[in-house]
Length: 540
Image (cartoon, rainbow, N blue to C red; front, side):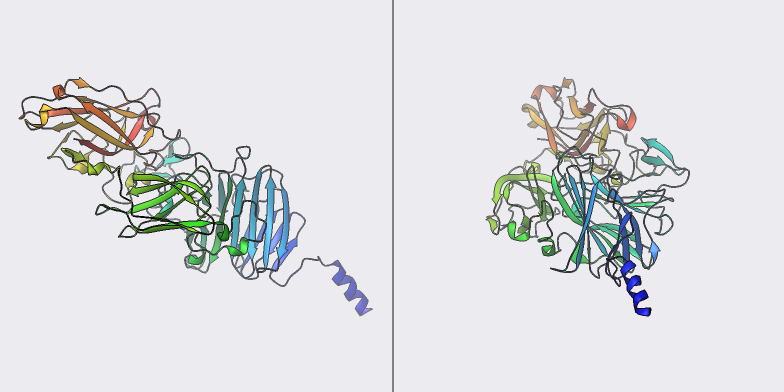
């Protein structure tokens, strides 16, 4: 009788029961145990991660919201499979229209590996959101994205102002996170548990190495961490379709995540045989390397980037100018050399699978500073220290100096007092006073105004004394908010104005007056009026 009862007891147990490692089906979810301290659930209906338990504590969710792609998918096909080789792995595949999303666990690792393949515009998936319970992770009111109690929305619903005049927004990166090339992960630690979202290599993302995008949101009610697949604020590239990832949710016992998980370090060969749609193994990729960059300027970091309609990559040049970029999908790319964040050289190269494309020394041919200027302004108000305040404050923030800082006199006024941003409705009509020698006034000159971003088709026009420039065309920029959501980086553009000699004063003791005016037929009022981010103003 005992043996018969034992037989029936065993027969009634689910087939997928493991001591630790493995998965079970509770009817609504796949329950995955990594065989260490992490257990999580994936909805069989839509692929949401609706429970994340680490060390016995639930971290997932608030207000009925789960962690998921975008704001959640509708009814999807959700399947699960386990592998014994190349390691003990579990893979969940979520298919929703032309989108395929993967959730992968690996034995003994307190990580959730995530990959997303978006096939076209029919599915709104531009980010993965990790939603964490309130009052588990610490909240620091100094963080740029922390919403203080009593704050008031001043722009849409996502930029708020508190009683001190400080502004906060989920769009602001703050001092810890800046350009995408500057960080490998986002997250926090309680002092005993660390929760980290490690970004992918962004080869299918938009905007290149200097792009700033949403990384986290923090309030007294909740915490969100983001992996941005395509960010539509201030974007510079069209959306790229295909596979993005792996990006990794990683739990640690307080410390920072394992650097072996960072996109620039990781060995992802164990994904090669998992049937991931769009996966390109390292054996099917190539690389480039360069001997050097000539005529590098002191005080600047040089970055080399590759881009085409399907992929983007980048790498920082060493002090001597040598550089390399690995794990590049084969194809023809535009190679761009950046001095700081300004492109000073471009060419076309081809990358082949399984081989390195080697380039001889590059000599930049479009560095504006190679032109000897009569005068040049290249330091700007509110951009005088890093991290730049406008990347983590709304332009109206009380901690910023007033944007209408008064007129500028060449050779007298500190360059750091020239406004870095100008708006049609805020600080328009800025004046620059300058003198020329008797020899200099005998011929026409060029005034250049270099911009890094323009909002609502903003562009500069000028007058010099009584002369008025033709009205320039707008540069090509993203069509969304930019200057007010923490980014000054769009498409670099130089507006050049040929000023005739007749425009200058003949009395060399007198000050010539340059007036810079932002023009546009678009935009709204205040800081949402047409505006520009200025990188340099010079005369030669």
